[in-house]
Amino acid sequence: MTLMQLKYAVCAAGENSFNDASKKLFISQPSLSNAINSLEKEINLQIFSKSKTGISLTTEGEEFIGYARQVLEQYDLLEAKYVGGKQNKKKFSVSMQHYTFAVKAFIETIKHFGMDEFEFEVYEDTTYALIENVKNHRSELGILYMNEFNRNVLQRLLSEYFLEFHPLFDCGLYVYMWKEHPLAKNSEIELDALMEYPCLSFAQGEHNSFYFAEEVLSTVSYKKLIKASDRATLLNLMVGINGYTICSGILCEELNGSEYVAIKLHSDEKMTIGYIARQDSKISEIGECYLSELKKFKDKTMR
Image 1 (spheres, rainbow, N blue to C red):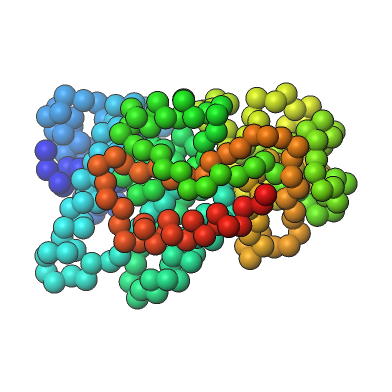
Image 2 (spheres, rainbow, N blue to C red):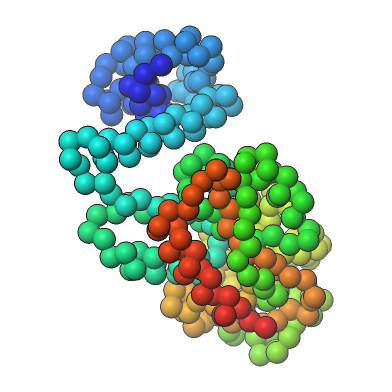
């Protein structure tokens, strides 16, 4: 197994066919096919499934490509640091549930370093995907919440993946809505009062278990429920149809604007915002800076 074979496999994994991948790699399609076939024979594993419509990764192939990416990324870091006097770019990646304050902390981290050359990545993703990102070294940190309902299930998955959850701060439950919503002037809202309005939730894809929901009280039988995949769409639905979502209550007007409010939900439930990291990893300097920025929001949690 060579680095070149891994590079070929990773490139092919992002394309619809070996022909498309070979063009990106500037090699012939037969050369690429032969390299992939040789690799599959060596590791005794079918990485790609072939059909008339193109290629796709097998289940085992997805796992292999995840490890292959890690090897190539580590090699790139070694080469940048030690070969040819290249300048080593500062790199940092974080995955998160859909939290505006976590994006704001990311922005402040970039401002803090003010580097001429850097490569930062931020992913707002499903709960399962962000856990996978940290497991597969795609992200150094993952930002999510735990509470009494999902803690055991998530901790079991994290342990299986050799990941750890570190709490940052606790929050009460709040209803996030458009400031012109009929209930927006209330000082506190009962759950029953919300039932006449659409509840908005982030879609979790194929891993749509209640335990992976980004919203607390996910098991409540809402009369009207709409799922969306991105934050901008949820904000539009709040304005367009008086939708709402359950959140931590941490407002970030600098990014979302002042058109939205967070009203206390009448509930004793709590949620713990925290981060996950690999058990064997040391947090980087940039990662520590990012966590420091996140911790500042502890004082902004609404009581």
